[in-house]
Image (cartoon, rainbow over all chains, first blue to last red; front, side):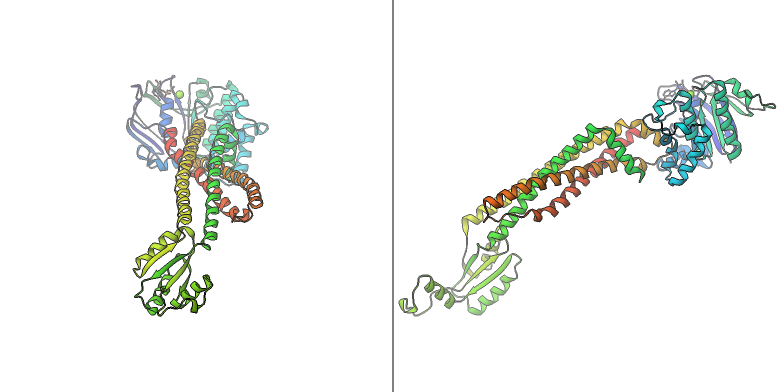
Length: 232
Length: 290
Ligand SMILES: Nc1ncnc2c1ncn2[C@@H]1O[C@H](COP(=O)(O)OP(=O)(O)O)[C@@H](O)[C@H]1O
Ligand SMILES: [Mg+2]
């Protein structure tokens, strides 16, 4: 069975907007996926369906062997703990420090203190943000906030990472670094990663599967191989 | 213990809301304390005055000595009876003669005209009317007499204090509960964003509720404890004054009311806090999370 499965999924918002129409695909463990398409194509909606922030209007969605549509509300937190999400609107808490925001996923799982400090130290080092540890999030630059979101999405080592336009506020080099981090995470942890973007240069820099949405329809599903890493 | 720290973090962030909540519980507890004070004082007066009030009951003339003795044993077992003294005809005659400083020769009678009687000391003043009724209902007595008006006034005052007290207590309890519920609701609303983020990354509802309820608990607890200290301070001076001004009146001692005040204030404060935040959580969390 596939790791993630969408079967004839429709999402029609109460406003009447058809955000997704007849979308079917499946994803295996360890796959690296670019989700592309113009603004309004339904990328964010697709991710919200996996996180069950939204329910599909019709069709079935599977995560591992869990039928997400029918998941009891009580199990929702345990589904979400398997996911690491970089939200398009970040969803950081500005009045809290970098450290506090970073460790939320560990705190809600009741992870022990010493493990929290070990994991957070590693992530802060990876983000090169050790010197921002006790800064309030509202003091950070756009790029730093986005990096913090990356850290928060990876710190609990989720099986699936959803990154919704994670490079929006970043320059080309930082964008490349961000996606490279996700790419390496995917390889090293055998986790699946879905990155939504409309940055074409990124697509050319990493091998992976490309799912293209257009006006709610899944129009392309192909693999792209990068033989020579272009780098920046 | 992260949620305790979270609770304090939240408390610190909204000082004005906290102050309103704190004050409403604080004043509730003050009113409660005044009633506890009043109640304990009545209690003490009741016990004290019971010594000076007795019920006298005169047996019907056809009741024999044995039957009367038997009845005395039965009455002794009533829960409100502190002690009971049986007066034989001879005792009664002697008492009568002593009272009027007479000798048996001054008052010659063929047959002793005095009835058998009992004198009952109750445990508590306010139980006198009820006890007198119980005695009367045995059907063995001609007359049941007690210290009439004084007792009735006391009893009426006692019942009034209890009923008015419980109504007022109930009202202030409800009032401060409503205040707390609404304050916690506002507090949840103001943290809507944060709570949604927690929920989106996999926090359970328990995890989200815990700091909110802890926050309510500590707010109530602190208000209760503060009310306790203020009350003790006021009662300290009040009782000092009363003891000095009316030394023969049975005033309670400060040490007698400290324990009940502390227990009631901390428990009631804490419970209002917990209950209020629980109700607030149930009413707004669903709408915040969806
Ligand atoms: N909550 C909502 N209610 C109504 N319409 C929505 C809602 N969220 C998104 N949409 C609409 O659904 C379409 C797809 O949106 P979205 O999934 O955010 O696209 P993308 O992320 O690819 O830009 C858009 O037309 C958007 O306006
Ligand atoms: Mg989007």
